[in-house]
Length: 251
Image 1 (tube, rainbow, N blue to C red):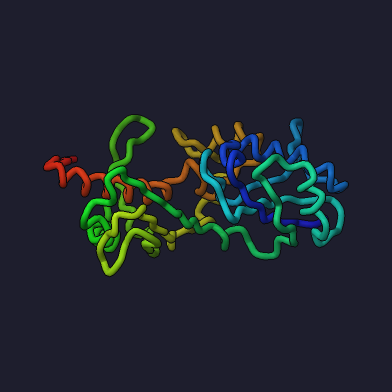
Image 2 (tube, one colour):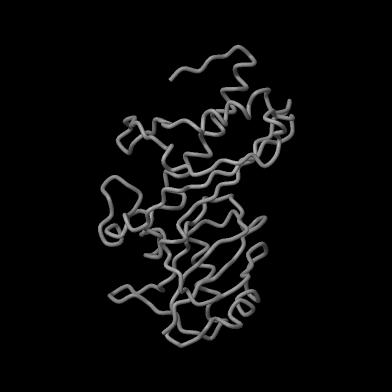
């Protein structure tokens, strides 16, 4: 038996394949490898396949990981080439290798965000964003499953913020503004108990049903609060732009 890890990319129209359909795509392509995928036990066995930190629909990627187990002993040689013969356009496997590094060490999300404005980036946007993400506390309000509003401090979840374009010498240039936010507070071990005990009024059970048991329970993906950080960037830019039109937002 071997535990293997796929490195794959998702581009163009393939970025619109949902998490569940992406798992199904790989499941249907695996017979080309001539390997036997290990299945779970019980009345409804399913292949043991999981995507590390699955992305929301519509987001392309340069590096995604998929873990799976096979009944044979193999180091993964030649598997990527065999899988690529049946992959849809935009989806390509770059490598397959033994999964020696624990998944919990890989649970860091890097978000690349690009904003484009019809009239250019508002003056002072970079300064406002830098001040926002260097606060010791950054409390936002999120709506709960019961439609209530709860305060959440996302500052501990943000490791670094880098502006890749649209900023020069601390000022915006009018070009599209791109930022990268690194999550330095990922603790995948905190989610171990959720593999068999989903949280009430949360997306855990729904994700497990939709993914046929192949969901990633470690707190990442499109149901994760970590996606709040890039949305906060967008909100900060929007508020800065509205100020130029003498519109104030209160909340």
